[in-house]
Amino acid sequence: MLGKSSTELVRHQNSALVLSALRRSGRLSHTQLAEATRLSSATVSAITAELERSAIIEKSEQQAATGRGRPRVLFSQRRGCGYVITVIVSSDSIQYSLVDYAGTLLDRFAEARRGAAPEFIAAITAGLERAVERSSIGREQVLLVSISSKGLVSADAPVLVWSPVLGADAVDFRLALGAGWGGKVILNNETLLVAKALQQRLAREGEAPASLAALSLGHSIGLGIARITRDGETEISAPNFGHMLHIPGGALCRCGARGCIEAYAGFYAVLRTAFEVPVDTVPAKFVPLPEVDKIAQQARQGHRMAGFAFRQAGIALGNGLSRLLSLHGHMPVRITGPGMRYYDLMRAGVEEGLAQTHVVRLSGMPQLDVVPDEPALVFEGHLGLAFQRIDQDILSMRAPIQAAGE
Ligand SMILES: [Zn+2]
Image (tube, rainbow, N blue to C red; front, side, top):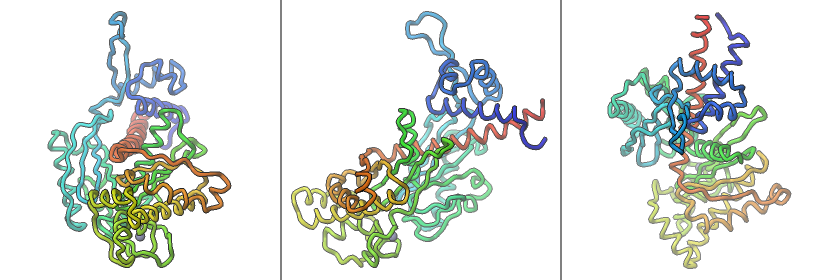
């Protein structure tokens, strides 16, 4: 049988509504599911019975708060239905987390990262094997491997085009991880995941704006945008913001170009300016946070060059954001990453960099807020995207089999 009949299509869409409501809220009763999905009680009964038969969701009982009366029956994703491994690549380490289908974190460990692309790939393959061995699960039970890195990621394949970690040594994870893991890998820019997580958090509170930007400050500068389309879908992207031109022919950037935003706003740029090192000096590979803390302390005590270094970083970011708003329209900006702790020193510069432009003079300053705990946001973004994909795949794989038996 080719294609799906309209009845099947509706059933598929309704099942997707039920799964995504359970994803958002955790465990829900029949009544809560009907409210959340706006489906009729009978439809919810039919869908939940079917998803339960297919071992995708499960029922559990919750005793009423008073301890009397019949316990409440709650539905949730079935934990053992499959697993996700998230792999978070940073400059000095790779962190692995194993999560079950209901979103529960089962195991987490990190390993040091060193070496060029071949060594990096071998380390990830070994890390994935270790993750399944530690929890005694089969490789085939892992439904998706979700990798993130800073840098430029191809929009339509798991290819890391450029990264601070490997430079222009592009890595195609589907090919590199081979038959064992390559078929189930997705790759995303780290700040794109932050934007996804922020959008999810706000949607849960019923406050999601039409678009929002996440700006990550650190050794490199990341940007993620989450936008809700007319069909109500979330579209997320991570433009190459850190390496967007700030000053033509300006300071030398880690990417090899001159005048990038990062070459003024990254940690190495702050260090370079504070110590009055020439702007064509090759950027430091890594600047430990305590070094930047020291410069920040000096700036707060009124040291001129230290203060100027952060202000200049702020202006580069503000100018960059003004271009973002000119191209994509007004949107709130959430500032995160390890550099967020210096935002008090950059804020005047950011606002100055924004205020000069037409878009801000017309529509006012965008809402700028600092959000702590970037690692938690990155992980939430991983799970949000991975399970969205898995839920869709599970339903698509299941429907034709059932239809054939009918
Ligand atoms: Zn650059």
